Image (tube, rainbow, N blue to C red; front, side, top):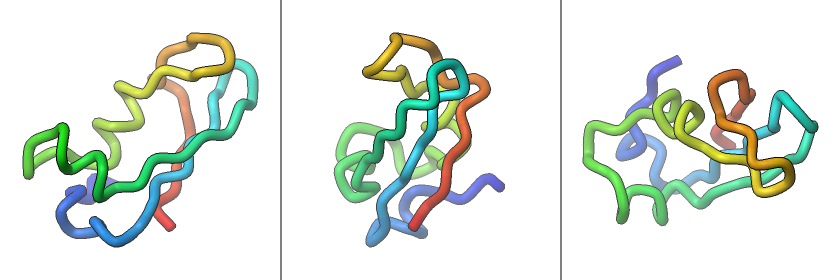
Length: 65
């Protein structure tokens, strides 16, 4: 699902690290301040780095809630 952040700016993005299972979240409104209007939730997932193990986000799972 490639949803633009601007379309869900009132939500948060919950991510789960595929390597260690660490769960973390971002307020999408905050993400829109540091990314372009065309950035998608999928792109954020790919760029996310786990604060628990430092793993990259290529295989992370996510949900906008």
